[in-house]
Amino acid sequence: MIGELSSALPFEGGYYAWVRRAMGNFWGFQEAWLSLVASIFDMAIYPTLFVAYLTRMFPWFQENHRGVAVALGVVIACAVLNIMGVKVVSTTSLWLFFALSAPFAAIFVLAPFKVHALANAVTKPRPRTSTFLAAAYLHVNYMGWDNASTIATEVERPQRTYPRAMLVAVAIVCITYVLPFAAMWMTGLPASAWKLGRGRTSRN
Image (cartoon, rainbow, N blue to C red; front, side):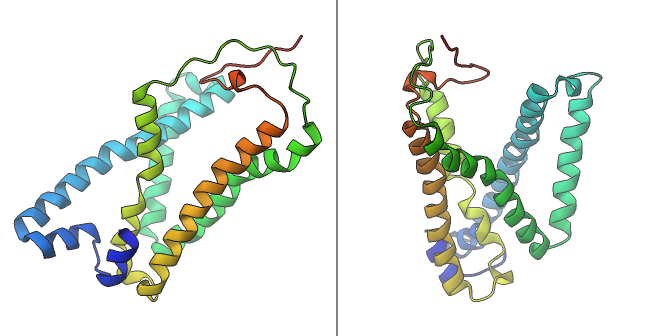
């Protein structure tokens, strides 16, 4: 839907412009404010998650409000990147994609050398995933696609670029899920070893 609308109506503002065109100024105004409010709460999640992961690896950041300073630094850095323009954002996003994909690529590359190495791992039963958590996963995986529409006028040949970009993005998302899980399956690690939080497998 986003690829089709961005190709047919490549307006600055994306979904705001589409709602305004289809339903008038009043609902366009409502859409703009609803999107702004949603973004405030949604964007607040990611610095918090970043600090949560960081403090698990380095507990030092839990002391003296250091985590708050790190979260504020993330917000400021992202704001500066966006102010610098779409080219800087796109280049930074590309390099971050490679950096974040590196651990998954490492898992896939190393898995053949660990075939059945973890088959004897002793684990506790895995807790069932709650409906809320499943809904959260769905939200994270399907959110964000509409954001690309807001800069359509800054994209060269949006009629061709957007559909191709959407198809490539969906393929990448599928690959980053399927290949790591396939790699772990090759190692013989039982499904009960997958846990949430800090759970670790224990060996005999």
